[in-house]
Length: 203
Image (tube, rainbow, N blue to C red; front, side):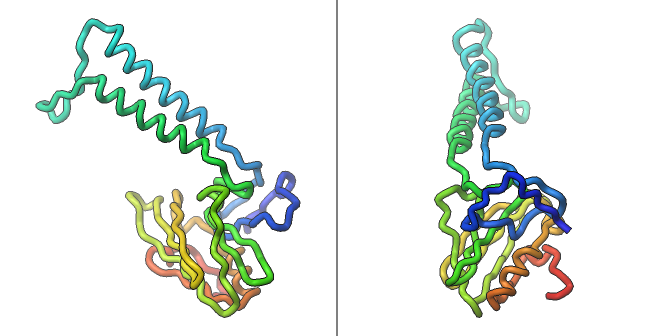
């Protein structure tokens, strides 16, 4: 059974709560991207310094050899690394949803009109989708590049969105979502690789 420590969780009842997340004990932490910003800043700086060195300081010409026959100037490699780092650094500054938790993939908010499903990792402006009573909430999944990567598509009559999962689907806890849809008489349907997510014995 997952235990969520609410000591630092916002008291605002309009803040969505985790409904599909890692199975385990987790502490609610204020949303932050500090770690990502530091990592990508160092990554970008390293490639930028390497570019300056190979292009302006070193008198030697460095090349990257691919398949023993293809030679690419090292400055092209370091320049590409710098560009990728800058893109990821800019993305790291994207404002997070105030309810974002790195161990949660889907969150819900119970409203009078129905159950609104969110993905906090999609950003603070993600509106979520409203699922009304007696409707179907479908979560379909496709495999990523490895067994611990998947893309989930969350679909309801009001719309759909996609969210990436960087964990084994068998390690996820969907019981909070099952309980929430049950209170609204909503049918929860899993298809594709999403069927690997363990369902409760009551399903």
